[in-house]
Amino acid sequence: MKDYTNLLCLKLQEIHKPIEKIEFKITMEQIRIDLNRAIPLGLILNELITNALKHAFPKKTMGKITISIKKLKDKPYEVIVQDNGVGLPADLNFKKTDTLGLKLINILTEQLDGTVSIKRLPGTKVKITFPSLKK
Amino acid sequence: MKNPKILIVEDEAIIAYDLKMKLERQGFAVLPIVVTAKAAVKAAKKTNPDLILMDILLKGSQTGIDAAFQIQALKSIPIVFLTGNRWLIKESQLKKLHNCKILNKPASEFDILAAIKDLLITNQSEPN
Image (cartoon, rainbow over all chains, first blue to last red; front, side):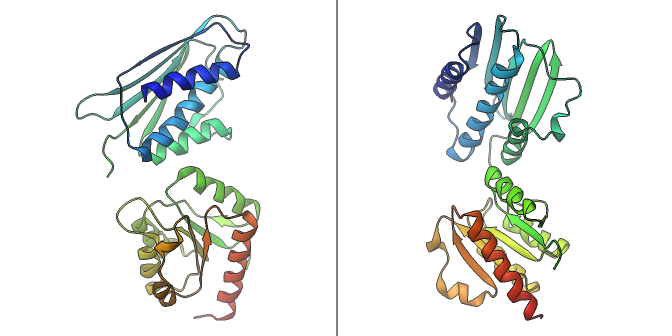
């Protein structure tokens, strides 16, 4: 997942070229996940990073996006995508939204039997956890 | 039949939601999506769908065909199988099921709707 995430960030940044001052920080071990779950996880990361790039820094100021995947022993996977941008709109209900990206994040996390939680810090922190073994 | 109720059994979330959106646009009432054969049987019992869209390889040990047998043993509900692995369904098995069709994935919206309408009409004309 590490190589994939590095490449994904690079390519997504290319697409959203105007925003060049965004710095990525990726912290994860070389994690190997079976294909059935790597695909939805990859799609989730794509949506989360795209959201951060597209919406978090409207004034194209300097910004930072932090991505981490952790797998502690006997614990679920923990995926965090965090930015120090403007934050989500106050009236947005993450669970009941009609925007495609957020909807996809919700349904793909469901497919992983996982949960999504969002924190409005200064910026946005999205945490996704999903169990390590398929039931 | 007004707004027939459709049950979608599919473990790939994006495919399931794509089907749901397409069907809802056509005026069908789509029941909550289920991802295992076991949940499919339970939902069929509880919610009485007019038709089931069934994937074959599901999450868990049982397949969509297992679910189809269990469901049709209880109720005569027409089933459209959607599969990328046509060989998973044996002709001999298919003969034991009634009111069903198989479509290869990815199936076009047109083909899916045609199969659904066809089965709904057949099922209405022979009530049992």
